[in-house]
Image 1 (cartoon, rainbow over the protein chains, first blue to last red):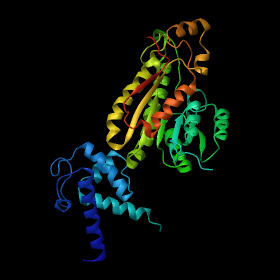
Image 2: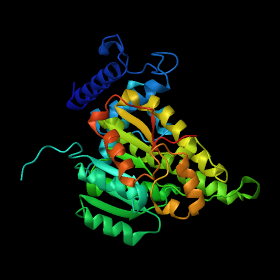
Image 3: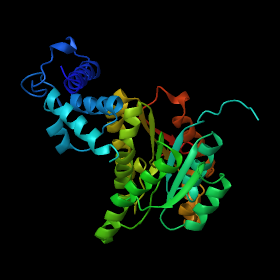
Image 4: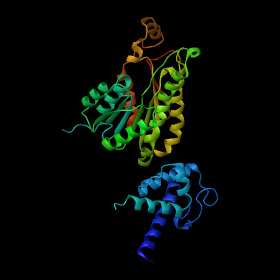
Length: 95
Length: 251
């Protein structure tokens, strides 16, 4: 694996740990598939879970999800959360 | 100089409408308890500036003009406080206005201004600070309601509705924020010696005193002390309450 792939895998694992921890899920973090829908079908999370997840993402990664629209887009899956964090980090890096 | 650790050392507090009356007493008391205090005012710039210098100036204290019913004003004020004083731990929603009149002759502006400032202002200010409190898992929101929210007087339909609304906001928000370490309470002052009651006719004042067990008007400091207590760690098991500070008002 390249360094980039490794960093990507590490980030996604960290996101899964955040999901398990903040929502007190009784499953190993590694069992959450990268692309599985977090809400509704899939993991079956609700809006209170979403709030908790938004806060824990901000605490852990320092990236703030600031409104419902962004939230709906970002909180779809581990993949979409990872994309958002990577994009935010790229945007905040000095040129 | 080393003294005992103050109960609100290293806390940052915001008091809306802090240039005079109960708000100013609250700002002073929070500062005396060790907090950095930011106040906003709508018109009384000189009063607010005087208070800030009394409390030691930035970053221990600051004042900024802000109409709490205006979303942009509120967001700019809170952002300024965070940049000068640090993350906000305590919010006291004190800013309030009265536009008394009998309902039959009350125009819509009289109704809307009071609701937008007293209740809408609490919504806007709370929304602007609550996220940071939740992320840091510690926060205190204290709404200044009124005995009028409960034991109402004629000619105050708008004011009483706004203050009763604050009590409802307090209860619902307490539930919503409890899992995140943020406690939400209200105080309900009765007849307190401020400019707002200075306009009461002596006969009305006398009649109101008859209904107060302690037979006297309260002082702003007697409200402020309760707010400081609710803001401290000593009040760690109190949320969703509206605490009457009214000398035993008989309704």
